[in-house]
Image (cartoon, helix red, strand yellow):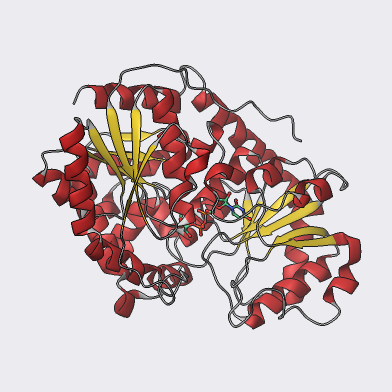
Length: 453
Ligand code: UDX
């Protein structure tokens, strides 16, 4: 393993106040919400998690929490296979279907004992009016980067107020292709509706928690501080306190680690596109040949169902595994945080989901960025053009160019430079989490703020 800093610590306290947390039921949202729950538990709060039937968390990993399940109205067979094409539809659907069960559940909880505050995912926008009707404070957890909010406001909602702020330079980095990806399923599936309601109801809340730290996204922090007239708490990265493994919905293949143990330092490309991204067969085949052409070692997470029309690896080119031999390993799901912390991993080919991006930054691993949608194009733009710790791999790149890009990051001078910058960012994270650092202080402020309710 890398000789990386120990995880941040939170001292145990006791205040006996109850908080109710309500995660959006997708892996990239469940992980940070349950990590936040653990952080606040250690600060002395009693924790109740309200969750949907769909993607319910593994309760046995959290005997110290109380869980309450609500029916979500999703049909078992069709809508439950969440992917990029259906996610906005599902989010809108859940924001309607959960109103009643959530309100009933919350009211019952309030009959039992006082609740100091509701902490809901920002995408659960309906919960603000429920909180208002129950005279309950609501704080929002936004699981993406801070920087994606000004970008959404400017390009998706056309709110030009953000253009005159400090984020102007960053906004100018966004290409048409980036915007196109964010807009991907705009009209028919409700992208705009989700973003608009999320921002409106976040502004109406009592505060917003981000899984980031101030130094990483200073311009966005200033912009949001001007525009959101509520306290902002950048207290991340959460996984430095508690790993995401306990909230994993899929079983993590631990053989990834024993395989990495046999690989040289900084030699392996780790490839993973998170929990919901899907791709066509052609892109999958190009990725496979890109990895083969790079002649580098790789650990590739291919989630079952992530390639259109395939159960798992049926679309792999004939002879691919024979061709790469011991040089490559494919798994269904990996213990990602441990993988990224492993000394054998030299770069991360990622879709730039915010959790993955942060996890990579925290281990000082440079990235190859292939964003799909949502906040991912924004995160990728920051990785490549602002923090300069990765390269963008355009969709049009053919397999030869892909192979060259991989080789460049793993073995090239440019890759080395990115690795150095990444390590210095890793240092900043660790500093921010230590006593006196900005994330540390922000967490203290959050606890004091909640206790003041
Ligand atoms: C989604 C969105 O795509 C993302 O843009 C948004 O910021 C959060 O919600 P997802 O696509 O799943 O999330 O990506 P990401 O945010 O990176 O979260 C994936 C999580 O799954 C990470 O915590 C990662 O450590 C974990 N993971 C991933 C594993 O544990 N094993 C794996 O093999 C792959």
